[in-house]
Length: 292
Image (tube, rainbow, N blue to C red; front, side, top):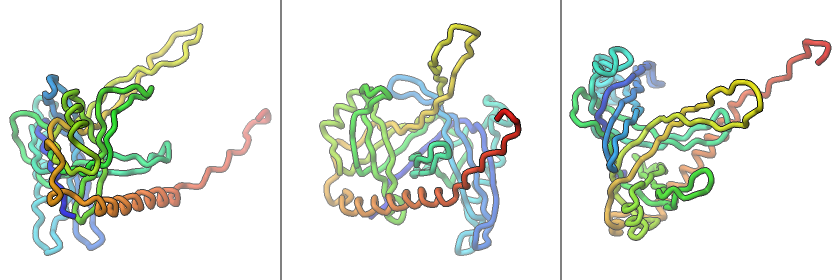
């Protein structure tokens, strides 16, 4: 299958960055960087600030033994000023064009469940930029659409779309997208269908908010605040094709199904590998006190 369009553009303040270097199995030196960009953008009639993580990775030399431009980009990033060093006002505004998004599945250490998330990767980053943005343009194969419900099972008014993204080599990633605007939800429910191939545009949201936990109240003593931080990572569709693409420009459902089965097997292998790596249960400690 042809690789899908998969473009992420980000402009914002460089918040923080960490670097790591090492050697690949073939002996080539590599370097990676994990950075966070603060983006304040207005859409849907309201302003919103996101702090978006981005990953970079590059070997110093290509397989053809030529200098890798991506490696030079990571070196250039080291010269940029981040908010963690100089403060947010003096931090550099950075521009990331042509990044891409991919599925990032991992096993939760606490629940033992597979967590389905996503990661933005780029090879190029530059200083400068005007208006903050965090946007995407992606070709999707619609695998499922359904109204969103909150934890109590009540409808939120938003629409959830699970979309397949064909990556390099025909690998399939499955990501969740959200439609918020009521007019957009109404249009999509009338004109898009499962198994359609659609080009979508939208905004990347990574926000954090404090949530006050409710607990049982006792009749004595001083209560303490119970507040946790909730991080929201969402891909908000704001525009797209009017209808599904014609057959010659669309993905074949059988090809998608085959790729989906390969993805499913990889996730299952991830679960198996994690169970093999799990440490054996610790033996209970010997009693230390006579009354135990």
